[in-house]
Length: 515
Image (tube, rainbow, N blue to C red; front, side, top):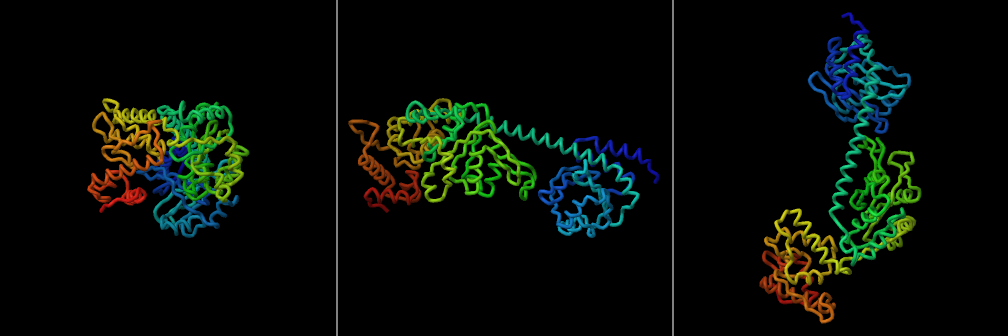
């Protein structure tokens, strides 16, 4: 067949450059090439030197066009060939098992060993991008005439690949930006629905300290028991700061596997490790111009503590697998329920990092030390859950129940109280909440025995009075269940605790006769 090379070049170029969706462009090109040479499928590959592999990003047949992400590791011999500046730009590989690059891949995958191929190595300004491979079933199918014709489209294919990759990169950046916007909108919506309950009472001192430090960029360390509301205080500091229009990024340091902590915080470069097929920004970069909240900072592993120190000192990060110093404009707020000073003494936390974080510590008191906030918190949680469930009216708590709430020590703090109220709203059929049914850790029966009242303050019990009240409540629960501790309809089920927990409470209360 006599082919007009100029006409061939023009039509093939129009097809390969006619669509930014390169899998469609490949299919259009393949269909045209089949009129001049044998061709069953076409593959577009990138050279991924970070992964020391060839990455197939798209393929096409006459009936299918698809984007993929198939990583094919290349051995040292194959890498040496690909990096050789003197290697040919076009090649015939009629027997894949004999080829330096294809041979090991074919042996490992078991695919395309009985195919012939034409290969174009694609370059832009001397930089190798990847290759375009035309396949046909059977060995020894391609000739030098086929290669000569196919090589005519090397340059337009390289340009098309470069443009398509840039187009994809722009789309990925748009997706990242859209993801950040959605993330921040969810955060803002969440915090706009909440408020700091107790800001004028039990948390007044905390809020005063938050207001003093908010305008500055100094690190803040929030300390307090689990569930006291450290994230709410951190968000309040952010909202009161000059960074309020920037992102507020929360990181639970204890919830990230140790093997991923560096990648999550600092990001990684493409090819930094197996599976790192694209560059990723870490939480520090996402917090640019805003605040990063490091919850449970005591859980940071040692190597992450070292890198964290660098961030605090120089406001610079280095992505995993990278070498460039990236400046970050962020404010760091850390939080922990553990005693960092004791951890430093025991060698579990770096002293230099603790000194950097401990610039402005704020201790958030537990709920048991600010029980004056309980009525307002209860009202807030009832209204919020009722709104969520779209109840016709706002429920109220039973008379006398507030005294029981204030008498309880709340080891789970505000979070536990929130769960108790939400469960009560869900389970109570009427307008009056049955709080005794929804407090798994509170020693009360279905009809709460009211605690004794002191003459000096009706909301305060002495330690002795509290023990007596708990003992009477346990006795009442045992009587109601015919002295059965465990099993169906037992006292443990009535009180919402485990049988072993109830048995311990009975022993510490002086013991009862039960079966």
